[in-house]
Image: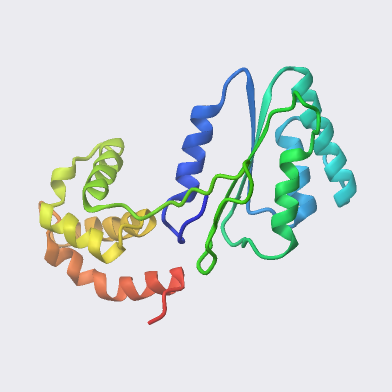
Length: 222
């Protein structure tokens, strides 16, 4: 699963895993592992296994944990949320090996990887791979997203005027992380102005400098 920074890959991954958990499926999620040994050890511990002090020990520990799940007739989902990883080099080959960590015919292992790929085109290589690209929200999706967030916080989408939502969506480029930050700043600005609603001018008053900082954090050239 690939996408730009802040587009919501972690949110999508966590929700998918939440919906996939069940008595016949074990899920192990690791976010931003330090190195290959840390990744393998963390996945093993998430499955109830042991850690390993070296790559070989960690690989063996994870293999034992996956086999134990097979004995219990449980499928295994190994999920890796690595924001700054790339598909270049041997790391990609190591990740693919995880799908075959238990070669038994009855083993059911799925590997899900979330990463940022600003310059790499990800395509399927083999029958087991399914690339999924997470894209920015549309204007309508942005409104629905904000409505869900505000409702959860005890508010209402009506506090943002329709034109304000349009401007917010445009400034944030449909990126959920940017929408969250700009909407929060807009609410604070509206409170300071003693305004009953967030209007486009409220967003404009904070959007310029914020947009430069946000683009810089996403790696967008000036």
